[in-house]
Length: 276
Image (cartoon, rainbow, N blue to C red; front, side, top):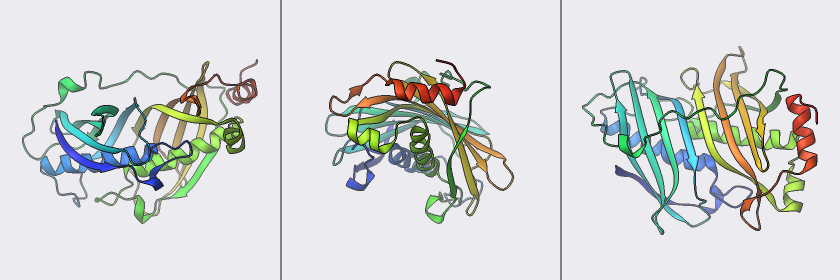
């Protein structure tokens, strides 16, 4: 694997629990992927530039303000119609693995490519952890428009913009189940994402497309909460993408998972149509 990005966590890249916002992890990986595509023979402004079909992200360690990091990338598979890239985001100070990404793209390599990272990513297709039941209620959690700053070099919505959009949706669905900002501030609680499973149903939308997102809860455990967000084109209700987000109810003082309290469990039960 080769280095494709080196940077550090800026103060404005922190989220409400004072760690590196997941969308900025994905922005770093999106930049690393663009460099990989150039090495595979693509021009970044090519309208046929490969686009992400799916991305599996796993978070192992936190990055906080001022932390230096770098990304190592490699090719897992490279065919005529599809490319699979692997990325590792590393804490540069401690040489510690923070995050892994397996990114499957629609579109082949234009130059010969060796699958040099296959052994670094033995798991390439994650098992789906939980599916929303047919009785689940879906809450409208985000309404937005694809803006110029959301675009990749080919003029389509960038991967990191989808994750920013999902972060907005996640705050709204948390509010719907009682994990409101006031509760989280007063109780010193946060939500820490452990894994993303993102799948796209078509090429990412271009500038000016209105997007609506609906969300629900797929699973609740002792401290875990798994959300699902579905993105649609607001003009025709065409599905664009779906994101499964796995994480934990986090005690900010201890930086450890904390049991989900009863008032949240009751709201979750109502949302997913279960009796307590």
